Image (cartoon, rainbow over all chains, first blue to last red):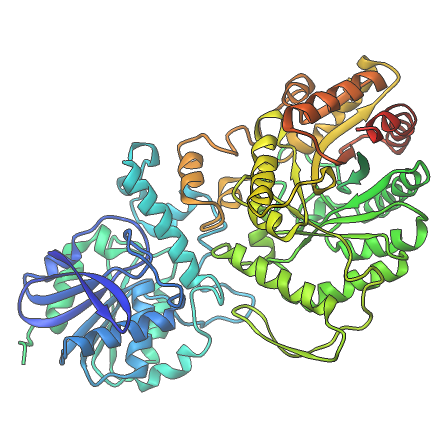
Amino acid sequence: MNLETLNVRGVELQFFRGGSGAPLLLLDSGFSFQHDLAARLAKTFNVIAPLHPGFGGSRRPEHIDTVDDLAYLYLDLLESFDLRGVTVVGASLGGWVAAEMAVRCSHRLAKLVLVDSLGIKVSDRETPDIADIFAIYEEELMALLFRDPQKFKIDARALSEQALACMIEDRSAHALYIWEPYAHNPKLLGRLGRITIPTLVIWGGNDGLVKPDYGRKFAAAIPNATFTTVAQCGHLPQVEQPERLVEEIVRFAGDRRAS
Amino acid sequence: MKAYFFSECAYPYLPAEYDSIRVKLPNRIYDPEKGAQLFHDYIDEWVAADELGLDLMLNEHHQTATCMNSAVPLTAAILARVTKRGRILILGNPIANRREPIRVAEEMSIIDCISHGRLDAGFVRGVPYEISAMNSRPVDMQERFWEAFDLIVKAWQTHDGPFYWEGKYFRHRQVNIWPRPLQQPHPPIWITSTSPEGAPKVAERGHVVATFLTGFDATRPVFDAYRRRRAELGQDTPLDRLAYAALIYTGDNDAKAVAVGEKLLWYLNSNRVPMQFVNPPGYHSTATVMKIMRGAGPFAAFGRNTTADMELQKGVLFAGNPDTVYKQIKALYDHVGGFGNLLMMGQAGFVTPDETIKGLELFSREVYPRLKEL
């Protein structure tokens, strides 16, 4: 994958690009765990995987500070490349952004894949749908994120200066985008009915951060959606079960060719 | 030098074991009867300090046993009425966390009116462990602080009818506060900064900068940053622009005073706060978080038990007989290049009302006259 930069309506947007086949926009989770989902998907698709501004050491212009802004930014990106028939895959925060794109404007989109997506409110006012990741211990967070937390533990003291700084700034950007209303747009659930493209809602069967039931409700609100789970997997299938996730995405969207 | 007596209104009756004193310590631990009595004790102590010729300082925190004073305008308004002469310093209003700066401007105006112009209006960004309690976004908090600040100051100073404000964080179409403050054009303004990065912006506006428990090592850089910025602007820095807060107890003899000083350390030693509340995303600079995550930096000693000896050495605690206390303060004063306001945390934890007031009496009689000469 090559890291490229494109000026998208005044934003110097950085993105990884690689592979050939039908276009696929991959929107990352907001969590700083290494994975190679983009490279795996590039075997089947022409993948564009942006760094959300502020993540991965990228610069965030001051006026980009909401999920809304990200949704418009990536719609503009698709327009810049004049891409059509795009499959959008978004995980966690990226899933929320993908859903916001699809409810706005789907004429460049062919299919939508939401992986353990944030973005909606389904329970009553006194029941959290999404655990408060900023108010718990690191170990508690890891237990929510992974079926097997030990395997993915990051030792901050072993990281290079640059990697540690990047992780800290990722966390700050993550908070900026999801702080309040916490990890959701109160309006989004009511708008999901506007998404008419085929949609796959895929969930880690052991996701402790956002339970599979939330995913079922997400799928139920989208007219043409199916729901499936990945076994032995927490909130981040791209990290914990990448092979299974890629299989599902390819099965769902991989039979298309670039038009 | 002016001296302000400060009490954080602690609720000291803690269980032997607890995970965090901030944010999530269940309030079933709080006994309303005991709390009510404490509020009266604390107000009595401020009244006594006022009668002894000291100025008064109050602050605000949320969801914590370290400070029951979760709505400082209320206690300040009481002091405005029941005290007679001391300045009433609120340090401060956590305006990056308050949703309505206009309301803060109104509250401060009322206190200034009732106190006949004795209010010193302080503003703080708020400590990191307030973030969760207030559901306040820690990213770009400074920016929100300064917008709230500008709005409050404009509300105080605009007298020709409503003005318009459509900022990034606050939006109003008709701002026209009643009452307006008694002091003109507005009460003196204080702002805290415990690192050199924050001081220049305070210096540019000429407000008082206050630093808390920063001791010999970390106080001078804050004051120097302030003085440097003033000098760049061609302005001097009178001593009354600089304030330092410490734990202070004056006793008949050193041993007795240090024993009470040790009790004041409740404030530091009970302050157990988990990392998720100490280091919320975007609150500290990346460089600071890197230090924190590698086990160094400003919170390295957090939650570890400290002793009077250690804090006396650092210049965080001043305790002893009157002569000793004067010398300790003077040593820090000389080390940091002087300051004109001493903020004295003279009550914390289980220091009793009798002990508190006795310490204040000795201080005001034996120490304060010498400090006033500085």
